Amino acid sequence: MLDPNRDPILKGNLSDPRLWDRIRLAALPASKAQHEFAQALAHVSDLPLLEAREVEEEYRRWLYLAAATDALRIPPEPVRKAWVIHNQSADYNEFCAEVLARPLPLDDGARKFGANGAYRRTLQAYLREFGTPPPRTIWQAAVTPRLPRWLTAHAAVFGFTGMVAWERGEPLILALGLAMSLAIYGLDLYGAHLGRARRGFGADLSEDLSYFLNESGGR
Image 1: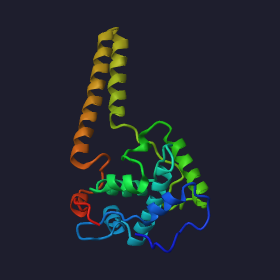
Image 2 (image 1 turned 120 degrees about the vertical axis):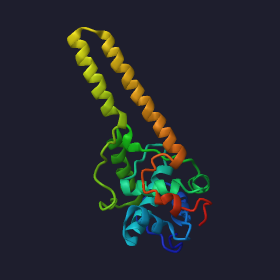
Image 3 (image 1 turned 135 degrees about the vertical axis):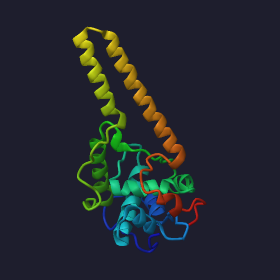
């Protein structure tokens, strides 16, 4: 937890200073061995502890940006890893209710259309709110949209059957390709559902999370 006597925001024009105060002073979940959140982040992300503390600070700032508006706010990848860890703690929903005063379900905004525009607006909001550009060591200049896993297979199957149907004049082949593409999409959704049930959405990090995080939400 940050020093309550030191607010790192020296300039800027916070639209909701009380929200920022709650976020910067709030405790983040501890590990089973009672290591602080930054140590958990350093372990999972293979970062030096000093860098993990910087990512934790940027995570708190991103939480503020996300909670202060209904607009989509996309975190950079290091910050998103912190979000995944926090989301998998037992008291995440309580944190959202008490600190953010709103739910903040984990998602992957980089998979959405217009992700780069939303990320650019996130950077602009950071500069506007905190009065300083986000550190480039953590916040990259742009995001690389993550395409759905099924999209490549969908395009290959549908494209191949489309060409065959065109050459042979058999529209039923095209219909078969469409059915196969939809089946691939359905299987991907089902796999994602099972993954959420086992580990939580987007949990593509180390399996050490299941050991390292305190399932009881201890702090």
